[in-house]
Amino acid sequence: MSKLTGATFAAGIAAMLLVPFPALAQPSPWGSGWRSPGWGSSRWDGPTDSRISRHRSRDPREGHVQASRFAVATPAAAELGHGSITVESESGDTPWSGQNERAAYEAAVVDALIGAGYDTRHSGTENAQVATLRLKRQVLVPPEGKQKPVSGSAAVAVGSHGYSGYGLSLNVDLSKPLPALISTRLDVRIKDKASGEVLWEGYATIATYEGDSHWNDSKIATKLARALFDEFPGAEPPR
Image 1 (cartoon, rainbow, N blue to C red):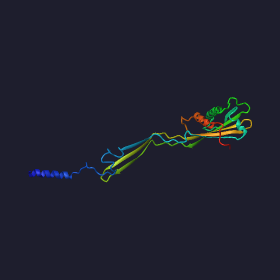
Image 2 (cartoon, one colour; image 1 turned 135 degrees about the vertical axis):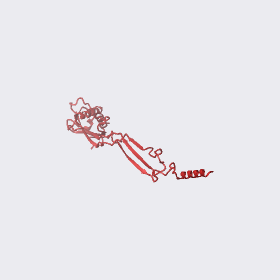
Image 3 (cartoon, rainbow, N blue to C red; image 1 turned 180 degrees about the vertical axis):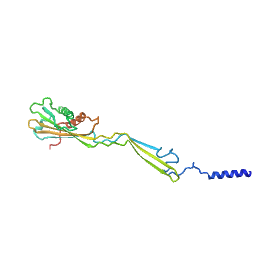
Image 4 (cartoon, one colour; image 1 turned 90 degrees about the horizontal axis):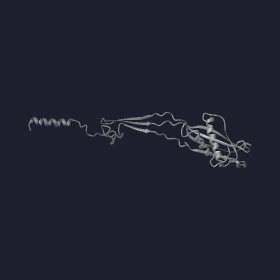
């Protein structure tokens, strides 16, 4: 080998030893699940992680009916479920119980009384009874406030060897805020028309979301009236 060739070969070896090797793997601040550089094997599986929430949990009380009934322990109780009866509702309009709303409940109570054996067409006859209903509503849970459709967080880390990583986690909420949860209570009292003696009374309640198309006044009234007069005049022990 000539002196010129030997000198050239030695210079090439020295240059190779001085050049860094960027392709060699370096320890990562993210652990073994993330290899730098690049996002190819990131534990985020990319620069962005988006989570979409479409459904918010509804109150378990929705749609469930509770009913209580009481009858007098006198001989007059034997007249329950017989003869004619008049149905009326107490006055005192509120934003939730105006005449139009009460009409749906009066109709539901009339249907339930007919099913119990009463005659609602001849209310002016002697020995008639009177069923008076009262409607009450109250807010159980107020409406939800407006939700942020998109929320999230970001994380940045820098390793001891100069590598850095950036992660962004997004939560996309496409659900609408829940309206107020409303309790509707239907009270009915049956009295002897002549004496004014209370023969039977009861109430039924249900929780529904305000403005829900699945729970209009007609459906709520029917569900409450049926529960209230189920197995009429069956009742709890006399008070």
